[in-house]
Image 1 (cartoon, rainbow, N blue to C red):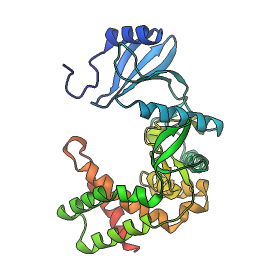
Image 2: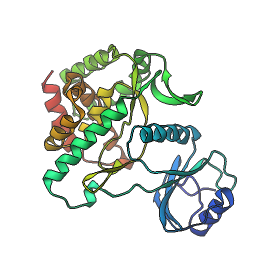
Image 3: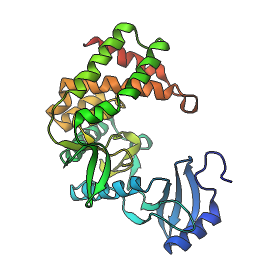
Image 4: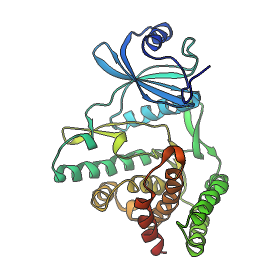
Length: 306
């Protein structure tokens, strides 16, 4: 029987032996980084190299990520190397991927002057624009057809309609918890409808999680972009809003400068509103308690502009 909150019960020497049996690689010093029923991540050493062993129930996640990393690399975006992947490793029992660590350090862990941080955020904007320049068929979550990334839905409206039930659920949650008034909720419903009616042509490749823990810095430049588990096909303004939701006003200024004119499109603010509502709902859950009070004034300010 698996332990609670563990996808697999293998740890330490047991995991190291499983990796040797399944991949022919000898790792040491394994350390569990994340725990879950759906996925787990372990940090380890492969000879003198730091690597990450990632395990997930869904093989499509890793297959999509592999193609995503290939696209990023072709675009000149620095990414870790995929050392090995197996969909059905016998000893581990679930899809497993072994990756190199990103070069450099997370921005939160280095001490650099504010001027250099401003340059970094401008660079983040540039890289996200480069990611979004890749156009895909379809919309929404990605699948692989003929070795190409393709959105699950045939139209943007079809994708938005698939999100309607969850949108109304989190909106109702916000109202019942006095985060939003009836008037606010009416505004948000109108925004949902406006987003669903957008016609922006072919979908862009979206990172959907481009914030501090997912990019690394070395020599005052971005040295690695990681965590492609939320890749999707959609409106680039949605991706911009995701990043902005994690930034303060100073960071937003330089990020927008790096991304370009689209970052100032009014539609970005509409996506930002819907995202903040989802984040408040997520942070209110018992298992992921977070600070909702920080998000609420930002949401109120954004809604006040409509």
